[in-house]
Image (cartoon, helix red, strand yellow):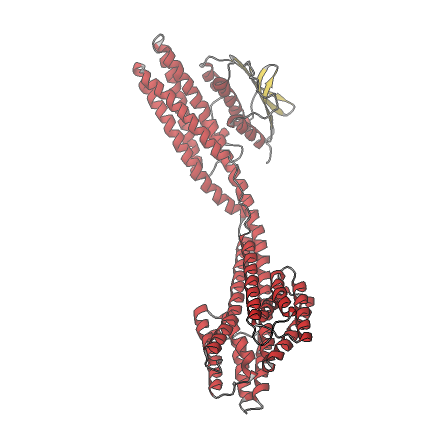
Length: 606
């Protein structure tokens, strides 16, 4: 359909323009009614076909201006204001501006620089009103579109996509880096077994130390908390600054006009108005009712004392008109109505023929402010709702990202920390034994090779799981198939005296129990002076209780049982046990350093 049904507002504006033209032209010419019908028809279609209707309206305006029918006649005042405003409101910027320029040229009655400048400035202001409203309407449409898009978005799908990217980026890079370190240690250990080359053995130790350093760096990044963005108030601050600058410019204009008044010395009330009206402009946004009331009182006082308005005074009224229209409160509109009527009478005392112009000068910005505020409310409501939806999605994504990072951190630590620690310790033992007990040194290097082989298998498994997106739940611990006894036997080669009491372990808990024991033994080897470790895995009233106790000596700052213990390993164990629905404790007691976990024998639904 080429044209849609006009809105009520469009029909009212068209009728107002047509009646104005008819009322002012009929006394002078029989063409008043046809002209009124044409103008009304063009105004009513202006929102839908702004350039076509605007160009035709400008052509009619120029035609009757050439005939002299609009000279000194208010017939074209309303169509001029509404037409130029509509061009700014609905037309593209540059093409609409060119059509509006035709109105500016046609409205010049006396071709003097002052008249031309006045027409151009007036038309530019009218066009700017419409342009500002158009931009606000566009913002409202974008906000509604964003709101609709966010409402249709699946937060779970968004979180899954971002987590998948996070998994591939961080997990893949980390595993590749650690895999290279373990392969290098295995290669050096295999070469060193031939002739027990001290440099190669030391290279194994050095690579292990670097791998541990890189691992802790990676774990620190993965476990770091993201810093939320701070809210930005630059737009509000910019609005306040612009408001103050405009009010200051009006203050300068008002005082300059009074200072250069030559026909009579300005009265004290005129100086007061030159200060009070710009002050009303400053507070008009927050205190619209007060600003309009004070301005109305000032206009009333000026009428009673015979003070004439200045251009600066009228500019202040125009800005107050915009704020009154955007306030959307009947009380403010009533006060502004009185202010507009008083200002029209005030202007008529200076130039009786221009009271209609003064009234239109205030009515249009009030209407523009009303339209602007309507779109602004829509934009704000849609933006606020969109922000809520976005915050909800961001929170879900951040929670999923955080959980995925913690999972990757646990997997990296569990898979590599134990193996690298054992490899470094065995390489150090080989370095110490290579001259006095070559067979024991080669056995230690063989342990390095075995630990590296197992670690590479688990790293490859993690890479496969990263590619398939299968990492999740309490962790990758369930992927290992090595029996707990095999882990204990391997750790006994380090010289530890380890006792193991093991009850049957449910299948869904084998991986978690394995990681608890593995991390506990690794910490004993790397950080403790203990020589004896007791491991107990027992069933008790539907619970599987895992307890690892060593006889190491407590440091002065060592935590008591139940206290928070620093370190990525124990932190990861606590997260893993909690993820399986259990309880975890670690710290010192009378028997030594103790790690305890209580897990439900029955699978827990999370």
